[in-house]
Image (cartoon, rainbow, N blue to C red; front, side, top):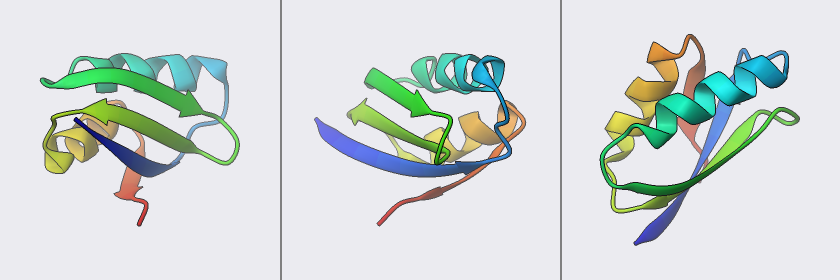
Length: 68
């Protein structure tokens, strides 16, 4: 299991955070997700493909890049 950090842009409220978290939690292999409105980030734990995480955030309506 590994920890992946994402920088997410476009979130403006708690609803955005919940929506992004739900999409990330649905990705196969994810065991834990924490999404933070300010500064617009997420920490994902699990055995997961980073491309799948980026696609999930995009599907939620936001943009993301891997931090690091």
